[in-house]
Amino acid sequence: MKKYAQKITGTLLTGAILFLTTVGFAQTTPAVGNQVADGIRPLHVEIPEAALTNLAMIVRLTPNEATAQQSGIMRTELQRHDLSAAGYEAVQVRVDFEPGTAFGLHTHPGEEIINVLEGSLEYVIEGEKPVVLKAGEVLFIPAGKYHSAKNVGKVKASELATYIVQKGKPILLLKVETPSSKAKN
Image (tube, rainbow, N blue to C red; front, side, top):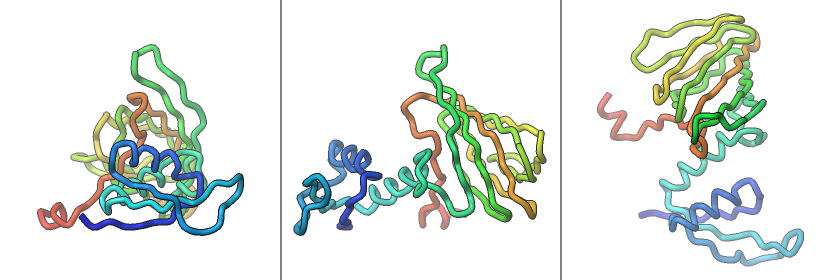
């Protein structure tokens, strides 16, 4: 398996690297060079190509991180609370879309309830016809259904997304097209 070597000096990836090294998907060794603040050296990290791709997607979707945002789309987590149903939590996120921007096919480990706050958003849910919603309109997305959203207007559009999801799972998973899945289409 081909490996990529990356020098990682920021704290954004620390938890992800710790996880990957713990489960045996990456190896770390101290990097050669000067020490940085507080005597901490950057790590030389070897991560298999597939794990690096998945890590990039997970980091990109981490809530409340400026670097985690897709260009033209801003996700702001507003609140997160445990539910009385064991193992589930409610998460509310405001998602702002610049004109013409889209968020590709993705799914959640639970249900999503959407309230469009402003603008016009087109939603495509797996197995259903596209629907365009305007401010004040709502949409329910069943657990595990792949769906996408696109701002079809000429002004900013925003939604309030409420997730009822399994606690401890990534709140959002992108559908990744592989060369073999593209060949099937």
